[in-house]
Image: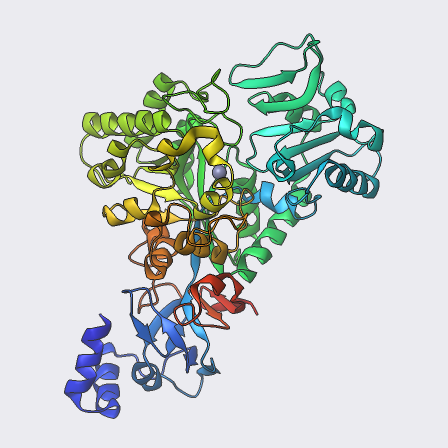
Length: 556
Ligand SMILES: [Zn+2]
């Protein structure tokens, strides 16, 4: 498209001639609302596709390139000089847990707690800041920061006598409760384990405070739910953060409808500023199909029509489902959170109703079961542009990798998990299984559709941290300066595409979103440095200057 325009200009022999021709052809005249000029603009249309100006009209891009933009710049057009800023399409994050993550913005940060004392002190300080009796949640702790010892309620009881504590491990699969919280949740030595969940107990049979997976529901019930005003305030905080990082769209892959309900309320009051696409719990697919019957699928700001199911657990919690036991705990090979027969039934039902289905699969067996189920349903229900997705796709047998392209299944991956889990994954599953883990390079080179995102709050929403991880694969502990499994690195242009146009494809919007091109939504970001010119190891240092969504500057 860009080459075509350039050759047209050359053929016409000058920009004035082109202006007349194009204006006459388009019947548009001096109609731009805003002309952004003097940019170093990476359009996303190819690895080296560049232009220097963008003209917008309403919420769309109307023209690109200095000549075309000048030709449609009139008296009413506002001209913004980008002064050489680097510009990219807006980043699309296809996997976030939006309200949970937004709520954490006002919760204690335990992620960087470096030892037991540090962990306890941070909880003590946060508890002190809360009104008596209010639950202390969030945290994102990571026991591997202090050598791997699991925290225990006894660590924190003394500093939280009046505050029920339910702080979560950063993978969202595991809580640490203090004794008060256990009491309020009604969990004691006599409480039976919940199917799909674990109440960890000591040698004497007393709960240690660690609660895993489905057993977390017992705690959630005791905590209760915040008001809609509180939730919407959190959502607004999350929107502001996302825009400040250059994210213009998120796909919410949630376990409930909290974010969905909140964004619908915000949308009723106006534009949300950040675009939302919702993936609601697959087991409730029929309710979603009924909603679509009544109200359609939303609009460019808030839309729905996707379903998400969690099939297995996580590597950190040793609940991701593998064929072989964990290397550091031979008693388990992980769990299945959803019964495979339910999975099959729900995927088929949702797919027949025209809904897009995505499934969380991390372990190698989990990926195979989900791939197999999706193949069976596609075969039974016939050809359709269904765009099944799998979230995470972390660990695979080698035979699973080509199946994504063959079956037309989108791999929705989070590069930051590789440099994070890469610090300790070898202890969990050994070297051999890591050969085909976080296999972004193999997936991209296979020709599969691969979209990349954060899994915020499991990883930072800042897309540059993910780009950096995909391109460099340096683990967070600094132990792999040349890349952890470096053969799975991808190029910057490939990673950028996965973070923009592939995200649009994953949401069925590749013809109107994810590129800087005429007719596409005007979603783009100006940065203080050119990613392609910078030292690749300093990628994550670039700063957002302005974020434009739907033709309106929302940040900067
Ligand atoms: Zn997730």
